[in-house]
Length: 426
Image (tube, rainbow, N blue to C red; front, top):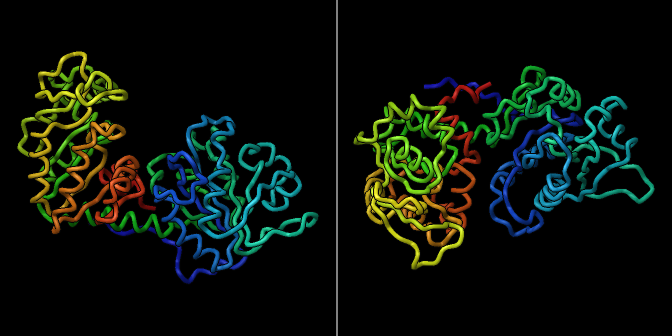
C-alpha cells in the first residue's frame, strides 16, 4: 500500500486576488478545434471543475500547456489560439489576443529582458474575461480572469527541463497547480523543474482523481485481473507486461506489441510493423519473456492485407500466426484469437486496457477492438480501466466510453503510473 502524498489544492484556500498558474494538458488530436460539438475533448472537460473553483475563489488564473511537437521553434500551426477559442466557449468567457508589448508587460508584471528571453511564450498572450472594455480602454487582469501563455514547446527549454524557464514561470504566479496528469511522467520544466522552485505547489482535482483510481486498480483489483495491451509505444508496455506477469491472472497482447514479441522470438509476422528499437534496446526483457506462460495470450491468427491504408474487402485474408507471407501486413486479430480473448474477459473481475488491438482507422481492422470492448461491457461484474488517446477516442466513437468504470486522461502516464506510482507523488 502506497502512502498518500498528493498535495491537493485545499478547498478552503484563500485565493482572492492571487495569481494561480495551472499546468494543463490540452494536447488533443482533433481536426477542428472550433467544432463545438466535438466529443473527444475529455482532457479539457476534466479540467473545467478546477477552473470554475479558481474563478469562484477570485483568483487570477494563468493557464499553460503544450501542443504538438514544434521542437522549440514558433510555427503558427502549433499555436494554442484555436484551443483558447474552444476553451473560452466551454468556460463561457470571451477572449482576445494581447500583442502590445506594453500591455503584456503590465498584465504579466514582467520586464523587457523577460519578454525578450521568453518572447515565443508571451507574445501574444490570450486574455479571457466575461466582457471586454471599450476600444480605447486598457484591459486589466481582474479577479476571475484567465490568461493563456503560448505553447510551452515553442521554447526548447521546456523539454530540456530547464530551471531558467521554470524560474520564469514561477515568478509569474503566487501559486502553481499541476493539473496535467497525462504529461506528468515527463521531465519537463513546467512539470519537474518547477516543483523544486515553487514553494506553494499543489496538484489539481483531475490529478488527484487519476491517482486515486489508478491506485485502486493497481492495489485492489477484483480477481481475475486481466491486462490487455495493444497499440504501439512498446518499450513502456513491455515493462508493464513484465511487471504484471506476477500481478495479473491473464495478459492479452495485440497490435505492434504482439508483432514485436513474436518477431523477437523468430515467428514470421510478414511485413508487419515491429518496434526495432525495443528489439535492440530491450533484448534482456524480450529474451526473458516467456511466450509459453499460461498467463500470456498472444494472437493465434490475424487479419492481413498488402496495404492497410487502401484495401478492399476481398483482399483481406486471415492467416495463422507463423504462416504470414512476407508481403502481408497484420491489421487485426483473427476470429480464433478474438474468441480466446473474449472468453478470458467474460470471467474477469478487473480489466486494464491500453492500446487498440488493430488498425482501427480502417473499417476492415476494427473487429477485435470492437468485440473486446463489448465483451468488457457485457461482463457486469467487471471493473474496467482504459487509458490512451486512441483507445479512448475509439470507445467514444462506438458509443461505449461511458460504460467503462474509469477512463484515464493519460496513455503513457497511466502506464508509467502502473509501473512505478511513486514517480507521481510529491
